[in-house]
Length: 183
Image (cartoon, rainbow, N blue to C red; front, side):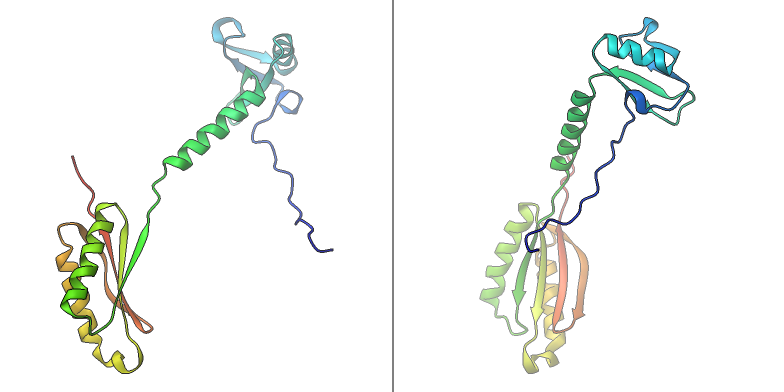
């Protein structure tokens, strides 16, 4: 029984096509009808679509009467998928970079990590800076908070603090987002 794929219910078509349209009469829009906008009985509209070797597709089912269009349904579905892919590709993808400090991080290491954070913010990534407290170093919470606030102050011209230093378990986190450039 190993290797079986889980059951996937068949995805229902988002639009009603040809004989699946249940309305008595429909408003047909497009180039294949006189005037480009006519109310016809559904059977007659389907005949027009068949005559042109196309499909009658219900575009707006909530209208009264429902709006249909005479088009090639396969091509229409392809175009819709293409649009969805484009929208998804253009959606902003935020990258989160982490920078780790210890409560006793010295100045040289601080400057080194600050340089990296500046580059990350310039590239448009968010920065999660955190101080990790190991063992008994948890008693130096103030040091960790001071370090993160100093870090935020140094990054002021490259980004803005989304979340001030906050303790979560053995870590104190702070988030810095890049400044949006207004042109």
